[in-house]
Image (tube, rainbow, N blue to C red; front, side, top):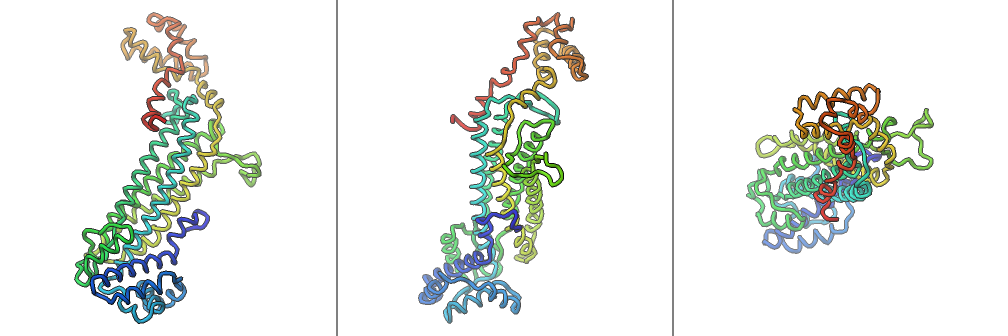
Length: 435
């Protein structure tokens, strides 16, 4: 995790002290279950909690032990024994390292997902507010980057809202997918640990029991989780790219808020650059880059290997922290986005009415003209406008072939901007309900 792109709440999930605290809770809950089953003394389980509940684990000491034993879980258990005393010999009975590591990772991913879901909620609230604000603000819709037909800026934002609403649903599914616990011992057979211990730990940690864990929790769960993060990141980039295009000097229909005292360039004092959306575009690329390693982690050797371990130590913190930062930054951009309806209208009118070409085409066909002939009539007049020779309505009105089928009044009627917005309310109801 790079501090520049990491928020404190997400960072805390991945800090060593948090990780060791989760390890302790897994071991202590397992000890409770074993004590209830008569496998270890109840006094020993109580001592583990009494000594470890409020303990601050000495990370430097754990690292020191690990340098000698070359095993992170053993290093932790050794340090825990220094805290608990002789009763620590009952800790980890019948368990294997993956029981602790995999269950802990899933706890961390669940907590990270909760933060990401809250981030999306924040973005959704900003999108809804701005969409309703600009529900009927006319703007040009573009296909291939070229003027197409009129739309509203509110519809642009409503589309983004619907996309991130789907993102929220996917994050919830990913959270549920990865929220499993495994306390099944070596090669996952429960030979040395009772399945009831696993059930107890799962409930205590807010997880479900993993149906079959072959010493490790299957990594298809994690692959799905990180794939969802990649999809959400792509949605972030899509919206950020739209804003970047709208902020271009030649367009300038919307732009990022530029604060008092902010500077856009070290060389050119006039610059106001879309730095925030450019930033989240780059961060989205990074998050997607973690998807492939997660997919490749699925294929482990036999019941277990640790080829996935080094990958997850990096992509777990980095992917969640990066997406968390990007979502929050994007929510702030939308919340303060500066919108220029006048420029939208100016751009809408730039092509001298060509945005109404399809209406004229349809009107001619409804008047009895073959579609191919109607298309040629409309296009030849449109191309004159493209060349800067005049406006579309004037040319159509002067075209004898067109006028055989449509009167001047009928032509003008097909240049009504409001015609394009007659179903905006319908779309908004689909997206936002009756609000």
